[in-house]
Length: 188
Image 1 (cartoon, rainbow, N blue to C red):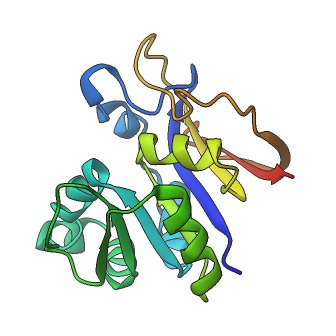
Image 2: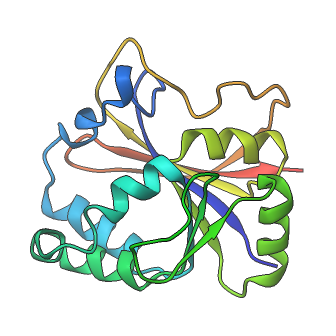
Image 3: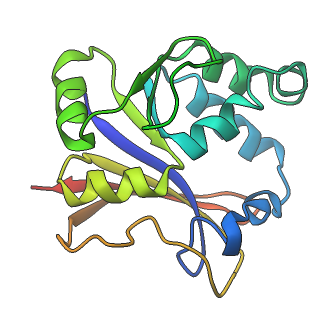
């Protein structure tokens, strides 16, 4: 059975987007060599990606472009090569290679994917999707990149979650640029 991991950047005060969906804070910290190596290694890890429509459209507008290939070649190659599943009620076609559009019940569709997929699944961004999957108890692990920025307002990934998922810390890593990655497994 495939494992489902959420990988998201958050601010030190717990927001994954700022007011009005602002994400500029995620790039406010210098992108040093150590951090770039980590990001490239993560992108080359294989597996399939899950997105909500908003995050998917943002990613699809950048990763297949020549600018992405020039700026972050390893990440662009991994993102473009990966199988992608996007949950959307409005998308009918996809512009990004290896994309499947799903429009059924999120919990049911992800349970099917976890049983059918041979590769692990990773959710990037997609806060509403993360909240639904956390509420349904379908997330196996979380990787949070804590960016040393305070926003004071925004959205958390867990808005509306009432099930209180239990997590066990498994690893942390601090980078010279100030970013800290926290790894957690879900406790069932």
